[in-house]
Image 1 (cartoon, rainbow, N blue to C red):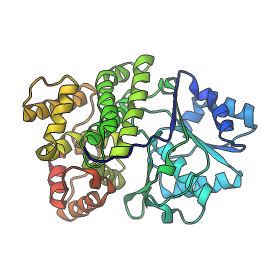
Image 2 (image 1 turned 180 degrees about the vertical axis):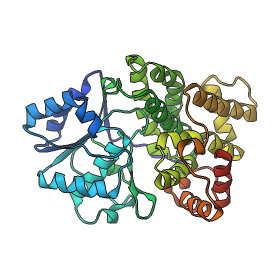
Image 3 (image 1 turned 30 degrees about the vertical axis):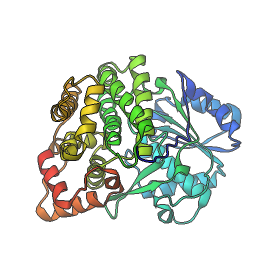
Image 4 (image 1 turned 180 degrees about the horizontal axis):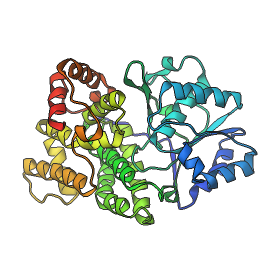
Length: 386
């Protein structure tokens, strides 16, 4: 067994209506002037109302920023950070999906440490505790509520910037399924496939993975295969929403320790250039990434296939094929696109393909993948996925 370290610094609280306890948790962390980050839809539709009411009852008028885009960028970070500083914030509450939570994480760096935000990019560049951060996820997919990373778009360079440190992990994640009842079916399916990608990729990251991360990822995958179709078909099914919320958080904890791989690298490169939805892009690349890794990760895929009840054979090749078939069948069941062309990715010429592939190969996610990705490999995967 390889040596490993497993961390989960975030306190996770699950309960229906738990979002209304945010003020109590924040006070326990010593906060006096919280700043709330969310998006326009959640604010206008009063989805954040229980949390906001609790915050205002405890702390008085709370400053809010609600103009976070679906794929947050440096311009947004700088704007939110200025607003938070001007408000005298000493803590942050984030209510939203992955973009909102990642924005809050990076804003917290600016608020706590100051300086040029780009000087803090990369892995383990942050070496000190940040201001208190509590997050309430409104999607079940990114796992950002427990992860140590944040991805922010750099429009000028057309790439995603990664910030990674154990100090980026939120102090508390409040998992409240009531916050997800209005999430549209397509977004439910897409974010759920993001969580499944986290689970499957983390299982085959053998160098950084462990029995702890494998156990979380395997159970998360089991729950997602069972409950994602239900939550997509009936958004009001509280049991399905609850299970997806917990599964996403478990997969987030798994990949935060084990890492992700080339599926995420390919999705990051694609999303940065063509503004594609991260979950949808992962979903399309996932079967192709698994086939690419099969020559070195077949035993792990087959074991997962047997643990999930998809395969009863001891033949690893057959078990892996069954798992990949199950992923593709889930995509069909969810009525999600299976090709890049269907999500607005243009057909790239050779020069464009080279640059896109270079960005994918240079993505930090590739360092955890069980098999090295070359530029030519990435190009071939693009052509098969197109």
